[in-house]
Structure formats: structure tokens, C-alpha cells
Image (tube, rainbow, N blue to C red; front, top):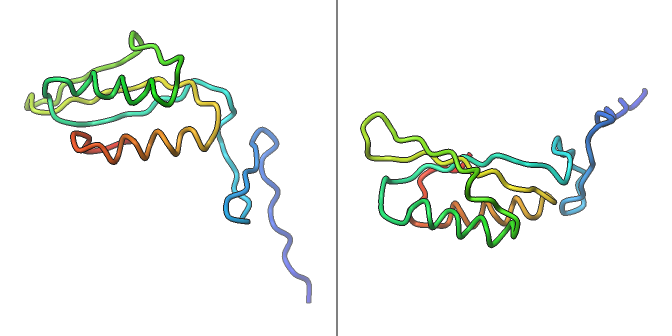
Length: 107
């Protein structure tokens, strides 16, 4: 009986090791990577996101922010353009954003 061969990753992706298991990343590093964050329309929300982004991407450019207000006017959707250099960097940024009390959703 033949054992099925595991499929090979696409040629344009990189394989990462995570706890001994190979994972395929569809992201080429470095690249500009959008992260969408939603939270309340409150004082300092956008500034807070900018500071978190700068902590994980020293070259973060706040002029690239896209901000959209919800239809009810109570929430903001903010797109951060991050210079992604590694999976670890994106994981740490995602963790910092999701653990902040003002942040409701990170995509």
C-alpha cells in the first residue's frame, strides 16, 4: 500500500517552522501589509493605534492611515499599513492590538 505524498507548497511562498510543524506563509517578506482595526470613536483611539504600530514597525507612516466611521457614528475602522518583515513581527503586533482594551476587532 502506497502512502500518499504530501503536497508541495506553491513556489512563491516561504515555509516557516512553528513548534516543529512546517507552515506555509502566503506573505512575501518584507512587504506592505494592511491590518484593519475596529474600536470606539473615542479620544486617542487612532493615536493609540499609531503608537502600537510604531512599536512594531519603526518605519510606520501615520499618513497612510485609512479611517472610516461606522454608519451609527459610534465606531471607527482604521487600516494600518505595516512594513511586515516577518511572521513573528505580525504575530506580536496582532497580540498587542488584540490585548488593548479599546480594540474590538483586528483583521
